[in-house]
Amino acid sequence: MNSHLRSSLVLVFSLFALLGCNPQPASQASITLDFWAMGSEGERVQVLLPEFERQHPGIKVRVQQQPWSAAHEKLLTAHVGGTLPDVFQLGNTWLPEFVALGALAPLDDLLSAEAQADIFPGVLAANRMRGHLYGLPWYVDTRLLFYRADLLQQAGVARTPQTWSEWIDALRRLRAHTGSAPLILPFSEWQTLIALSLQQQAELLRDDGRYGAFKQPAFREAFAFYLRLFDEGLAEVGGELRVGNLYQAFADGRIAMLVSGPWNLGEFERRMPPALRDAWATAPLPAPDGRPFPSLSIAGGASLAISAQSPHPQAARALLQFLSAPEQQLNFYRATGDLPVRKSAWQLGNLQQAARIDAFWQQLQQVQGVPPVPEWERLASLVMRHAERVARGLESQEQALAAIDKETDAMLEKRRWLMERGAP
Image 1 (cartoon, rainbow, N blue to C red):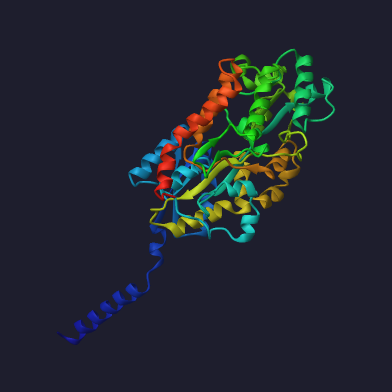
Image 2 (image 1 turned 90 degrees about the vertical axis):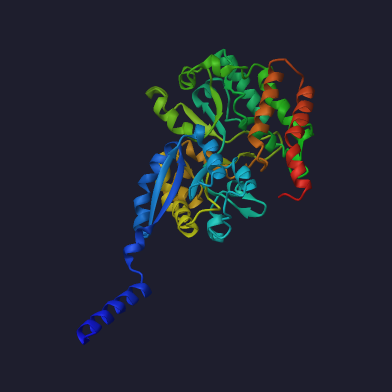
């Protein structure tokens, strides 16, 4: 081999060695995170992602929008098939089921102590299970009163009701003034009844979620108050069928009060006639007599989770940290109307002083999650089925409470069997 060829080979091998020891930026775009987001959030979150990719040049995010109606089943199917995305959105009542399946990576060290203190405590607690944080709250949801303030004043109600007794009195006065049942309470929505029971410190499930506790005095009292609203004609059985278009009925005064969530802030602002734009308001839920106001409501909303099998856990964690930052929380609120989980995001946008949103700020200081069992959605439907039967005169309250506990215990039989054998 001549000296010229030998020198050329040495140069080539030296270049290979340098490249091997010092990977080049060409590999920076090699990580692609799959992110499933639900409903309109799947579309609107995408406006935030160019900034994330600018801050993390080695990571690309591929968003797939999923309809809420199919999201639960699609996530379960993907878990069984080993095809869960790196990051996904899920309702926080779904969290126990996916934790039980071992589908989620723990997120304990994702948030600093300061960041955790910046999240509404009841919402953060709803994402903790078995001593670990498995979901990062993304936006919050709770239930409170929407009401026609003008009709309340015309009916002679001095202030928005703050106790259960004041609530009954206000509804009676509204019924006398408008001539119709003023409150709408669909049996398809369990959140109001469960919020009332949480206000009474009802256990709902006992023995670490093994058995129903619906016959106990705390739930019994909330159940009786809820059904009293129908007994007195303050809410109408099947009222949602009577009113048809909720927003039109609210504008017409056929209903003057409902229990709803933050998504209706935008809907009422868009749908109320110009003459009534200042005629409606929001307020925290009334408290049981003798209890502090505001009392508890449901800790709802959506969370972000990381698949336990994600090949890119650090990149996924970076995305969650970005989306939970106060500035991005405020940007996401402005894009969607979804309320931020970070208190500093509220303060950044001065949301806690905004008309109608301020009531959510108050209520979110007092929220609590439902029992963290995978069967919760079915249990809630069971409770509401019997509540409707009582309201229609098909069974007594005592019969309903006994049946709820009996059917709950049967539904939780597999859970007891697993727990007796040491399953978490």
